[in-house]
Image: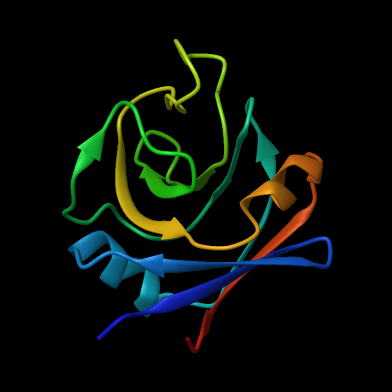
Length: 125
């Protein structure tokens, strides 16, 4: 069964599908979540109170992928290059466990400013 989440920041919303892995399960089971956006290039991240779960760890991710950064215990949204990128693909500061993919409105994240409240909740298809 597919699981979808809604990410809302400053009145704009994006929908994402969670992957089928342990990390996605941990995120799903701890929703809703709220945090203050931190910006690093074209990445938004915010600390969450979830432990790292199993899933594919990547040091280069796809635009739109969601990841868990264990060094910062953070939920990460990748929407373009980061300061570590060597091209157009996002490169986290260190490998992240990927757990989902934004399916709509990825471009809205470009307008988010540091400190903006990020809300993540379960949603239907």
